Length: 525
Image (cartoon, rainbow, N blue to C red; front, side, top):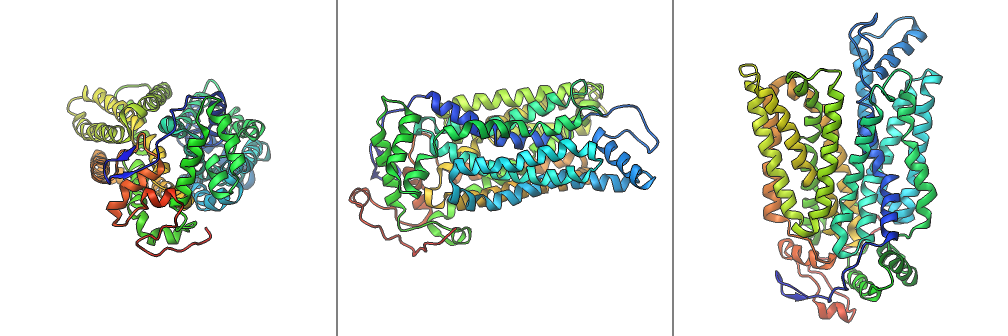
């Protein structure tokens, strides 16, 4: 094989691998017990639905807010004023992304010390602890346990959201890397969808069922603890970072099947190892000053910031208002929301199926184009629906179109690309930056959008349209197609833009140490 962009010959790839039962089961165990927590806990705290008509302390609030207020009355003999209650509730909601940020900052240390699989297993402690605390909060009459639990389950989600794509990207054969990489987002959406189903008022979204609703987050963690130990650690981690070639070979045989050329992939991993020998393990600080990875780092930041700042959480936040304005009964809006969740899951699965056929770039660019168009039309529809009420139905179409666009590209594909564009030595540091950007932008949108919406109303969606355009432009100009290419080939493609030389194949093949064009340091993470 030859990289056409730079003319550097690279090792002939091994034959294409088929999806083996061990790889499928490993993916299911790893994903269901980790990023599922992210999706479930994003949705579950916002979906316990309104009950009753009114009470002594004012308008109808969600059942958890009612619990907060009733607990305060039992302690102090008075109900909270509206501002205090809203502040306390905002604190509860914001603790999750705060915990996610904390988790993303420690993930590098964990995956280096305990490996990818080991980190996922240890991470279950946070999920199970938070599930127990939320489950007993009603009996203990302590809403503080819910707030603390939100921090803990946020840490769990932060660690999982960075560790899982790293693990799956290193487990997957080259021809299945895209499909397995999108499983991160698929299981986030499955978590969201199950939270929406369980939180229906007829099931657990009521005054008696909410402790069970919140405590269910511990079930996937227990399942993962019982199943994941039987599956292999990342072969790349085992070989490149632990130097255990035999264990890596055995893991590959389990993951690829008996008819697969394991030795060809082993040699590919050794090539990657020799290529990056001069770098050592880069710390986060070194990563920011390391010129050979400059554009890879910028690309990770743009992909993750664009994913959040393009408005997906804001559209979900605004959806109930749009449904109501279109004449949907508020008591039935929960089913419309559930329908949008089904569309989200279906389109993400479609993305997983077609990503290896169409490539990463086309899914990202088409997804952002759909999202941008939906935001523009939605702005017009919201501005004019008071004069033309039938435009409220167009608003619903725009919401669903936006969800379709985000589901085929901006949501699932960055999890694939961020794994592919960095090599093993810099992957943990890059994913620390990646996670921090993800959770910070998530927090910023949640904090700022209500105020922006109040200040400029429907025009707020023009901001998101602008973000979609800028992110798509960056992807078109900077990020190469990574489909069907090895990690080494992808980094070759970035080398010219970074203004550095990449090791020639003859140097790699003879294991001759390569001196990069810029001095680098070997550092502990």
